[in-house]
Amino acid sequence: MRTAMEVERIGSAELKDLVAGGSTLDLGFSVSSLPRLAALSPSAGHATSLRASFTFQSGSEGHSQLHLRVAGAVHLACQRCLQALVLPVAIDVLLTMVRSEEKAAELADPFDAVLLEDGELAPAQVVEDEVLAWLPLAPKHSDETPCSRDARMISGELHRPLAGLADLLGRGDRQGDE
Image 1 (cartoon, one colour):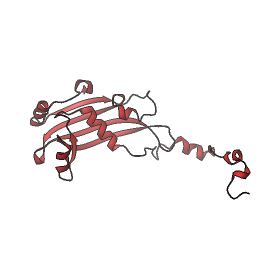
Image 2 (image 1 turned 180 degrees about the horizontal axis):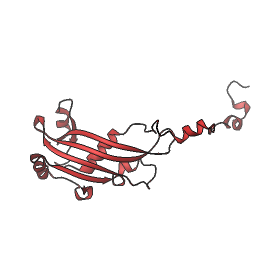
Image 3 (image 1 turned 90 degrees about the vertical axis):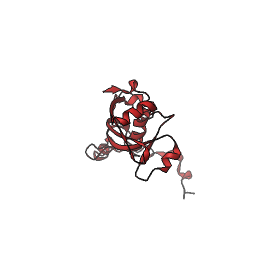
Image 4 (image 1 turned 120 degrees about the vertical axis):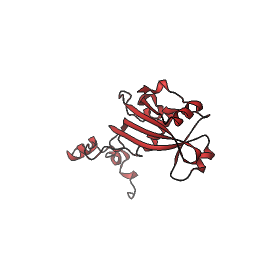
């Protein structure tokens, strides 16, 4: 497997050859090298990676297609307890490669598109875009791995950060009191 550093961009001539041969590229990406994904990680100390398989093929409507498979894991912050969680990634998507937004808009409904910049494909950007689109809006621990907040609630230890606010404001500041 080659690393993404070896294949930063795939030019239009190489793309034509890859599509004509029905070729597959297997690439590895460190999550820390994908800036938008790395920014979602609660700590920089977690080294995770993603493996991506790019299979190029001829497609319908005269556009080449890219069958992308991504596997690995990303570290995110749970939106319930704000602690770190590891989310396994498993993406399998067929993308139609287009050269402009107008061409993407012309595609039939079931096709997802990837926009080629100056006729070139940036594999790291495609992987990062697809993983970001795949992530849940509010990641949280699963039922099998409950949040640490849930464990505190079960044990009876519940943190209430605003519990003393009424006392700090004084009785005259409460609504309904005169």
